[in-house]
Every structure is written in structure tokens, then in C-alpha cells.
Image (tube, rainbow over all chains, first blue to last red):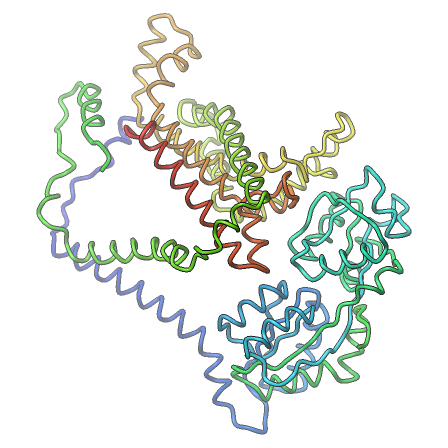
Length: 280
Length: 287
């Protein structure tokens, strides 16, 4: 059997010129495919830029912190409904990496970040149009598995030995906030892991790999009954302001402005507070 | 580039029926056709350009001070230890698996082979989640490990090694299996007719025969394990000195301090090149 496999090198009977042609054709097809991809990518921007002023149309691209995923998705649908012909596309992620991609030229109309520090990266680079506005605030909460099996009632309980606690990495806003809260309580905590973002920390509790995590209240709310939240007073010392801003290189500034207005409106605030955010 | 001399000579020895030898280098000296040369050069440039960019934009001036921090060395040490351990584990269980796939016939072998290569195409993060569901504290096997032996794997260095093995072992299995298929089974058959057991034949005949394939597979697996990120951060988490390997350190540094991330990347790049070059000279020359 192995002998037959060795003879796979078949004599090549195709004439040389024909082979050459085939290679060229394959290359041309690959190039075509590539160019098709790139043109479809920029197509939405082109249609947005070509919209007539006054009436909203085209695509609004919103870069938003991961913790805004649920509420902004809801608001995006409402926006599309009240402005037929528009489409809201989101890119949710860690505020730091979103800010970095904006300053390196990612095409976005609106940036909503989870901390003033990450917004400052964008404003310092001169990429924001106008001053950012704080639209919500978020507070930390302890997430435990359903039923709170370890009976955690305060931040101090997390320092108990044998308890597996995960925190966000100090580089990420939720990790910085957790550190601030711990300092405010005069506590020292050695977690089993510094997770790369708030959702990763929460997932470890949902899967019951960790006994507790310090995350945002909104994340506990969004996880439903998969985790249980425990409030702690030190979280008041580490409230995160969420700023939102229109970007300078916005392709669809009019619709971007309208989206920011929706976020700040009573209707928008209702959606956000229902998700667990606090009014600014 | 590869030495065809050795391969040809074995082919001659093996093919008793008078092989029609065709030199693989026919026409090599007569110029390279343009439709091959241009894409080849484009491919080379595409692979090398990002590495060149890394070198060009490296913060050379602050590099010494970036690299003398203990965290960097801790992450590097952990990376090297875990990648080596993962390769060793892959050898212990991967080589027998490759032998089973290449030398025995059982129903569903094709399917098993496809499943073995699955981690190659699976996004590593998915692999990490799957590992959590299998070996996590609440996983289908992990819960018994926890309640019977008190072993929990997530958030431990052992967890890092397992995650890396999961992702890297298929490279070794594929490589060894390919070598086994190319090696003539009649050597083993000869050994068994001379009275050796099948295991002895494997140990004394097959193993030396496929050593180049094992070496090449080990290098591939080691390199893959060294760069492993997704499965590691998902399954083993991120804690300096315990589960924070170099790729994790690079990723988290990138959030806040790109200069530090570039410095870390350079270290990883240098280590990879040094080890691959070193191993190539010692082990893989004949493969």
C-alpha cells in the first residue's frame, strides 16, 4: 500500500504552454477575488458618503466597549427602525484595542469607551470631533455562581484562602477599577488569573472554574441567571465613566450624531439603565 | 535545499524491480519560469515584511531596560519550559498514535485520522473552551479528577502544558505518520520473520528509520507550542510566573504599552530563530 503511494508523481503530459496559461489564469482569478473583497469592504462607506444632507441614510459604524454590547445592539435596532435606510454596524471589544485601532486609522463614526483614559488616547491623537460626553457610569459587582455557594457577602471575603478569584488584567479598565476598589478597602488579593477582558472573567465563573470574579454590574445583569451578583460598598470608589464621541474621520457624521443623540435621549438612557448602567 | 541524495539512495535500495530513476532536479538550472517566480517572490515578501517591520519599529534605545524586567524572563522561562514539556508529552503519546494510524488497519481509521488533525483547523480559543468543558473543575472528566484526586488543571502550569499539547501534537502526528507511510514496511516484516516481536521491530527498526520525521515533527510541535495563545489563555488563564507565557504577555502589553510588546516579540522571535536554526543543524539535516 505504501508502495503505491510513493508513485503518485505522475508523468506530466500537459504541454508547457498550456500549463503556463493555467497558472496565469489561476493568478488572475486570485487577484480578481482579492479586488472584489476589497471593493465590497469599502462599498458601504461610499454609499454613506454619497448620502444627501438632511436625511439620514447609509451605514453608521460604532466602536463600543464590550460591556455595551447588549444595550447598544438594542439601541442600534431602534435607530434603524426610526431611520429607515440606515444601518448600524458595531465593533465591540476592549476599549484599549478599539482606541488603538481608531488612532491607526480604522474607519469608524462613533466611539463609546469604558473609561476616560481610553477615550483620551483618541482625543489626544486628534481623532475625535468635539469634546466627548459622559453618557453612563458603570459600577463593579462580585459575580458568583448561582446560589452563591461560598457565601460571599463582601469584597473582603474574596481574600479568603482556597477561594479561586479571577480579576481583569490591570491594563483593562475593569481590572484597573477592581484594583482601585481593593485599594479603597485596604485589601490585598491574589487571583488565580488576570483575564484579558471582563467577559472572559465572567465566563470563568459561568463555567464554575472560578468561585468569584470582580466584573461590572451590567455584565452580571446580562449573564442572567448563570451568575449571581454581590454588591460591595468599595465599588463606589471605582465608578467608571463611559464617554462617547463623534470621530473626526467619520464617513457618516450626520447619522453618527443622530446615534449619539439617541444614546443620550430619555429613550436611550432607559435602555442603558435597564442593562444596569447608572445615569451620569 | 533538502538533500535528495539520501532519499534517492534509499529508494534505489528499496525498489528491487529496477526503478526508473528520475532526477528531481531536472531543468533546475535552466531559469525559473516567470509565472512561478513572481508569485514566489510575492509570497516571500509577504512572509518577511511583518518581521522586518517589527525590527524597523523596535524601540532599540529603550530595549535594554525593557528586557531586564524580571517579568520578561519569567514569561520566557515559562514559555520554554511549557513548550518543551508539551513536546515531550506529544512524543510519548503522539508517536504511538501516528504508528497506529500508519501501520494498522481498523474500521473508521480515516475518520480517526481526520479527527486527530482537527485541532489544526480549530480556532485555539475553541480548543481552550473545549478543554475547559472536558478537564475543567466542572468538566466531564475534570470533575472526577477534582473530587477523587483533588487535581484541578485550569489556572495551573500543567494546564498550560495540556493546552499547548492539544494544539501542537497534531503537527507531530501528521509529520511522523507521513514518514511512516513513506518508510518501507518490509524492513519491519523482515525483522518479525527473524523472530522479533512487533514492538521490538518498532523499537529497533522503525524508530531509527523514522527519526528524521520525528525530529521535524518535534520542531514543528515545539514551535507551535511556544507561540500558543488562544487555548492557553482560555484554559489556563493568565497569571505571571504560573500561566503567563510570552504570547500572553505580548498581548496584554499591547493593550497599554506597544513598545514593551514589540520588545517582548523580539525576544520571542530571537528565541524561535535560534532554536529552529540550532535544531535544523543537529536534527533535521536529513529530513
